[in-house]
Amino acid sequence: MKTINYLLVSSFIFLFQLLVTQAQIRPAIQKEIRLVNPSQTGTGYVGLKATEGTTTYAVTLPSALPTANSLLKVSSVTGTTASTEWQSITGAVTGMAWALEGNAISAAGTATGQQFLGTTSAQPLVIATTHTTAQPIKLLTGNAERLRVNADGKIGIGTALTASTTLDVGGTFRASGAANFGSTVDVAGATTLSGSLGVTGEVTLNALGGAVSTSIQSGFDRLLIANNNGILRQVSLDAVLTYNGYHRTKAKGFSTFTTATESVEITPTNGQGNTVGIDTNDAISLTLEGAANDMPIPSYYISRNTTTGKFMVYFSSPFNGSINWSILE
Image 1 (cartoon, rainbow, N blue to C red):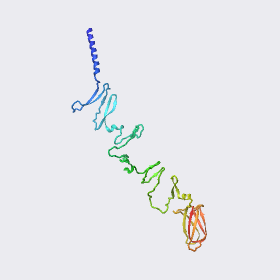
Image 2 (cartoon, helix red, strand yellow):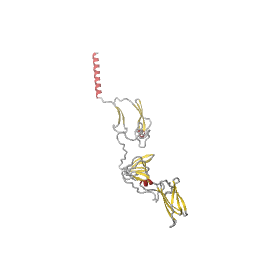
Image 3 (cartoon, rainbow, N blue to C red):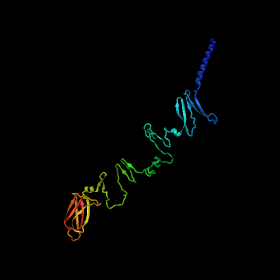
């Protein structure tokens, strides 16, 4: 009996050592799915492997037939079971990448939950065309091109997309701040400056529109004068003459009388036919011209009416002839 027990124990020890030895030299067992081309000769295949000890899980394939260019996507995971579905490439990149045919975004901006096209690192955003032959860059809104960087680097805006200068604006242009120009500025249309304009060189008017007039048109009674710093100001012609010590002629006229008269009332008007008021400081000058060479010229005196703006001339004897009169301010 002891001999039998000894043999059993010896056999158990031998088998245990054999198992330990086999475990040490056996390679790791891997779970593997092989994809084989049935028409291919040889042993070529694609193997999907999971290392030993990987948790057992199940992947459920979609029952529907995919369309062309579809991706297999994991649609849901429940426990250790994953369900898959077919999805188009366009649908797969939505929310993760920008499509070449436009993107529907929920909120524009850089805050959390908003979308933008740009960089999130300390690197510039580069928009470029790198074809062997230079190509333009276009910006559109409402399916209409608004701005173009042409192949030669010239920028066109509005109706001047094919720019002929470095910057060509086809439309209105407004500078709300200071505008500094280092070279010639060519403005083809009207320009409105809401801020200051500084010019270090000369200002030249190459062409003035309209016909040359021999008289001052109504409403054009202002001059531009400059100080030693080149600052321009708008002033009236009266102010310029008065400041420089000249007397301004407020009104003048020539009145003729064919019949002898002892007095005449005169309503002064300026060169534009507008009535001119008279004040107490105005100087009224008269020159009497007789109707005949040997006609005596009477003496006269003047009475002004600052309320009505008129003045009366009273003669010492009846007079027929002409009065050349003027009012100096």
